[in-house]
Length: 441
Length: 179
Image 1 (cartoon, rainbow over the protein chains, first blue to last red):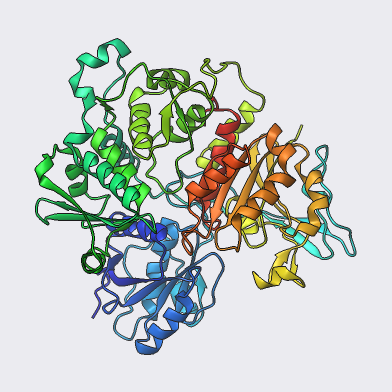
Image 2 (image 1 turned 90 degrees about the vertical axis):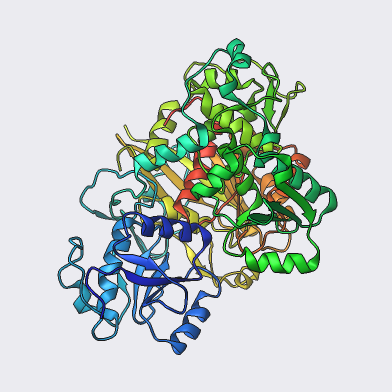
């Protein structure tokens, strides 16, 4: 019998890598007393992402084989019997409530309600056990700080019949001018719930990725060995060689570390990489950060037999190639600069990194924006943006590994950006605060 | 005094404009979806025939309006009207469509004047379903069109991704802005 304090045994069905990462993070931290991830043949409850192609069919197949209740992740309520709907974007509150509400759907003897779910409506779990239930009207997604709550409002803005198509103008683009031949309501969405990411954990991760050293004068850097590193003395150098080999040959490349202790496999066609280590794990961090002798690593082109074996063996950790190289670069450098980089070299960002799929570091959007528009040295970029140098150094190392930062050949202006407030700067600042978690709703 | 600004979302049918606006809007978006009666129905049963509308309240009577253009080319007469007073353009391209390169050419041409005076950010959707073409190809296509813009993989359902597109737009307009 399931003890009320036991975590629910759950397995994923069709959950995207992004949401999987969020859920795993939740399970490992705030939700560790609520959920425990198990293989697909062992769960009490399935967590299925119904916005993914094929999940509906997979759910039906799985349910007919072993009828279990589920938690349905989706933008819209998929109305699946014996599931609890959790609306995206996922929130800690909604997942906590879902854990409480799905328990009564378990077979007899497994439906004890946990003791510590104060946010669950008193009778919610008992009044809606057959139909899908909307758990929470909170919309604050993971990783975004909370905003002040206010009462939910509903405003009727339009009620017209036979109206014409809308025609907003710059002078008057208010919603009252948006008409359609039926009643339309502008419902303000519910206020967001608390953030999931612990600020301390976030800060710790940024230290792992960018270090914690202070700023330094450019002239002093060559005499500060603690702020310099050589990629060739680390795994990063071997990854760069493997990338070069893969691009040259257009063949998969196998990276064998310490005679098979750890392995990676780069795939040119899909631009993905398999790894024996989770790139967010401590082991991977140390593998990148600690020096590595040349003889510890073997690179080879994978023949079809090796390819099939490794794909099967390493299928647990499959990443976008750029995402893995980006993280490996940051973990290696920890905010240091490569010894091979000429400090006085003015650089430009040839293309923006795919920042929606790369691990985030402080100010990375601002660094990308300014380096994309203007040529500058790492020291100039940090000074222009008035941010700690280590964040620019980190961005420099990672973007260089991906081949996105190149030497300036006079393509872009090298003048200092104007410090005068630009038109709309105040508005932009408030909009960013609002989107990233501050500001007024 | 109320201050209003606009951000425009455009792209072909099914690229995720309605979904993207919905992901970040403070209100339930006003959509004008109808059952498609033309080629659009091969990609989704309902499509936007006039525009989508969403809103971000910043406070102090300031709002940023989010407009999604209809994806069908026969509504292009509306596009010039929509962009007037706009801060910038989010172009969403569906990687599973037959010819994303043609889509990029069409929409950047249609909004060229607006892009030249303001800024554009490109979000490539459905890359989880189809990896090719990859982002490098999109970057090279922009080079061929003599355009410079950030290009990101994006899931229109994901608020963080849509927020990132807008962040990149704002920082591109003014790298000096601080959140």
